[in-house]
Length: 374
Image 1: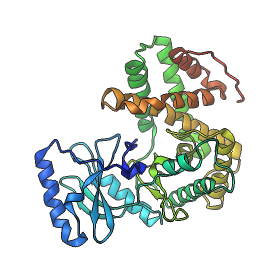
Image 2: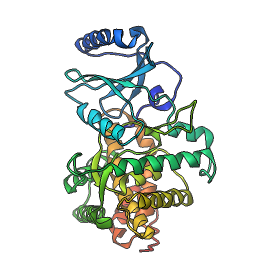
Image 3: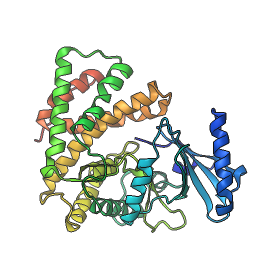
Image 4: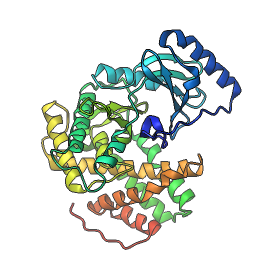
């Protein structure tokens, strides 16, 4: 995951953050590259400032330009981040008719990419100002924005083809799930699992992987992998335009349920289940009309979305703990209770997940109140 910090490019914060360089040679290479670009875009080097910082090692800078008003620069040290997937997926999304940053220039050797600017207002920020409490109601602008997110998602999925993006397979799912015991349980919670608990966790992981890889006949599409309001941009002066899409560099070819689960079971905000079901069923209807492999039974589809969301929530708990303990970014763990609540909600609905629910309760505390419906 590559969620941005609370600074302008991703969150619309008005303050200007200066750019700090710890590597003087890299700073010199950046300045030389920017000088070469100046004649084409009318770039003002003195205007460069920090736009956002990812949970990864990349960051984004914003700069004034006479030709565009402003541009964004991705700063991704090549020894730590590879820009090639970002460039590749941007081209795929653009070909699918999606609103993504245009690649204007790329210094592959140094990991600098000049991008068009999609603005400073995320859907997350817009929702927080327009829908401070409750869930968006049908007919409200916020509800319509979610519908636009659904339409853009279906457009992206319709462009899918095998063999283009890395597969979201058993190996990748296993690596992601392994983050939970390594970083959240052992490092963050300080819990040493007993052999029986380890076995229960591994059996739950195997069940989750099997369910997600085989659900809906194993349907596969392009997966953004972080399709959520913090990575969708609203055009402030024209909110009826297509949403902009960011942070797509980790895209894979995987389960059709993943991105709608990501959109409706967000890492940073929660809606009531009535709204979640409303948008999910509308996505399902739209996807069926578009010929996407979502099946003919919404109940079966919604179950698959819940199981896919469960895998994502377990993974993110591990990622957020790693960001805190390894990378010194403690703000992410503030949202851990949201994910524990997601895990409890899903695990309490499906009887085969009882061992996982029991383990979570042992680690987190609280009463075990399972009300299995399946």
